[in-house]
Image 1 (cartoon, rainbow, N blue to C red):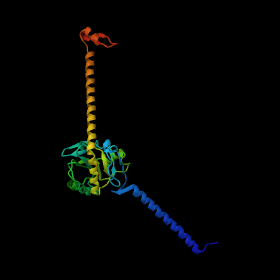
Image 2 (image 1 turned 120 degrees about the vertical axis):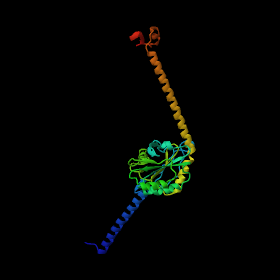
Image 3 (image 1 turned 30 degrees about the vertical axis):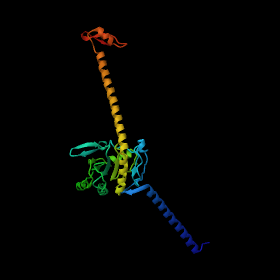
Image 4 (image 1 turned 180 degrees about the vertical axis):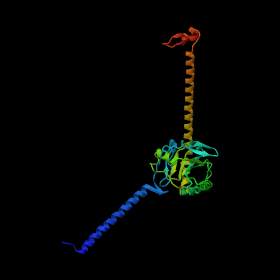
Length: 302
């Protein structure tokens, strides 16, 4: 027996309404997941990372840095990856390889900016950097250009817009040396943290305390992070000086050991060299050896 047409229509309406509600709820869930886990920027998404901690300055670990916003990585001194061994080409005017640790100082922190001429956000960001005070004194600006497909006109414009630079570095590797190092040190997962621009604040030991994986939009946030890292410079300088003293002491111990080994080798050679008098030869011989005449009327322990 068939149902009345009104009942059929009402049933179909309930089914349709339920399907729409499920779709809407699914959309909200997806939006919440993406919104909480990722930050959109530069044409690709990056995971939001807020890695805090590392002890207090009094413990030598470096205090916590203030939160820097979604997508920005802040690390304590114990957790921050050291990038001092990374090297780049520098031409001023002769070209040579320069390690970042050569540019660090106990009196100034490094702001390293990875950029490219084909990157519009990179060019916009240069004007923001100029708004920060203290360049060249307590803050050193070190731009690293991804040189592939350089636009000479844009390059000149970007250089003119930069704050005073300590040294301009070139990176010819695919994907960039800095991005690769951050993935190898597990700051970012594979496929993350490889865009430009990318800005890092390095302390006096060359450790990346703050990492901006995308364009910096607010100069006050940058000022705050620079000030936080700068406030830890005395503790950082003490750690660096202690490490340098320990390294110097280790080198001195190694040098003394090498000198002693060399002296022992010379003594051994002298002791085992041949002599003309058999009486002088016998005292030289250790247990198990005997003095024997060799060619030319000379004697030697054998």
